[in-house]
Image (cartoon, rainbow, N blue to C red; front, side):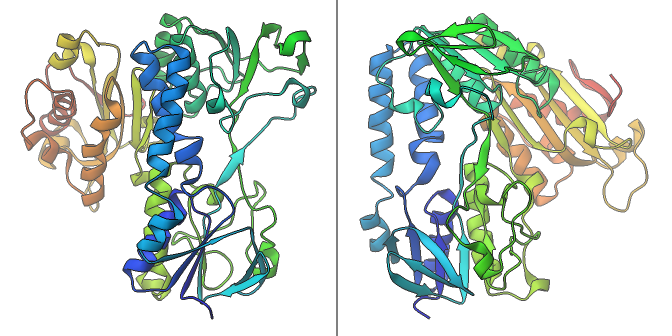
Length: 458
């Protein structure tokens, strides 16, 4: 064996796993065939949030893209091979391929270890549309390389990234049309949250075309395109991502993949091959940077433990944030999955003083609570008797929803009753006071401005 631990892939999950291996005293090799930092640093979180911030501040398009490049370079400088080697990680550059059980080749060299973590991420998924390739579509891998904003843009895909980029380009002065076959923006998230974001996009001038399924793409003279009857200077496709496993020869290691191409893992992130774990987007479990980071640490901790002592990855404890304006943040179960015994407390931002003072009343805070383990079905009186019940999930739509969701995620992680949030003194007036107001209604049975109801009953 050349190392104690091999980590394949240097995105968020791979970096987390490699650093966890070093902390555990393992000789660790990090194998990468791309820039260290992966999608998040170069084509995901860092450039997109920089673009959003600059566009919201009214920065011109050319200066915005220059700022994006500078920010990416600054963050990337903290994750170089030199930096990691200084931390004790053996960085090996090249494409990995399995030759057998926990043994890989990289550029002619053979590496092996009793423990392997797969963290190869995912690539943009292009839909099977006639003419798409000829139209030279932008993706999240290429859009941030622009030096200026196009005059007109069609965005195909109204998920989180599609909505974020549509709003950013609209604020840069681009005429944007957002197309999706789903009937709402942010499909898969709360419909009420999607409706608030849709209104915000329209206010910024985005032409929304939900329920639209293009039958092809036509490349026009002058590099223009036509899609779904709309002509534009460029087409941006944000239609999801596909797990990256090409060239790994996973079958030689006994690692199974599912029909989506994702590596099959159990609740502890173990693959079908002994000693091989997988983390991040390649698992298809939770396509979020912070989820990959959590998985990396968890997988390394589980590698040396017997199955009965391993920790489970809990996707329901991972908060999710969409950085539109307003933001959308969720954690845990949505209302329609919480069951008949769950209760919901919802407060509109119009009843939250901080939102009123900021003139940002578009949005809401919704907490979902259920019976404590071992207790009977909750009634309104029962909510008071058990401190508001056990938090099952939350949806927040607000200017700073991504920050506000953290305390809900913490309460869920430690198993606190909802009433603990109500008992926690929050500074006045703050955005997070809305969380306390909703929690207090669950704990007491009522609250000013708060609607309290059984889950699913509106």
